[in-house]
Image 1 (cartoon, rainbow, N blue to C red):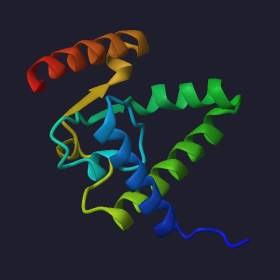
Image 2 (image 1 turned 180 degrees about the horizontal axis):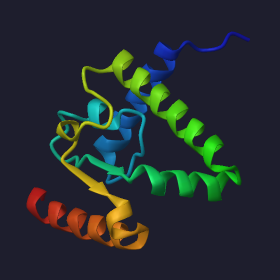
Image 3 (image 1 turned 90 degrees about the vertical axis):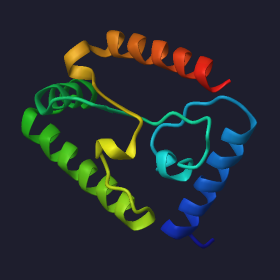
Image 4 (image 1 turned 90 degrees about the horizontal axis):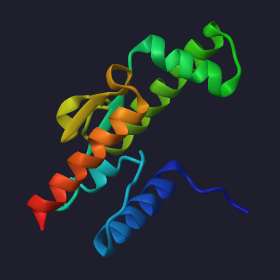
Length: 129
């Protein structure tokens, strides 16, 4: 058994994302979908962020680790995402210009952020179709 290269995995993911998006409404989290679907007229690209302290608290709760470990995890994942984005696109990870909407969930809370995004998506669908 041979393992797939990062390039092969990216190409497969991109193909699957494009196929799914061409057939029906969907939500795709990550996978450079904003880049893969940049020319798809009916796509809405959203980036959800949070203040460092809130992200750290969330990771601590979810992974049951201490503050320092959570900070290290966040930095490690940010580095991996940045490298992945740089390798497979011409976009910069986490830069607002790469998305239609950027929202800070730590400002509104998770539930309110979800409600805001749901309303935005409903409005977007009305405009697009």
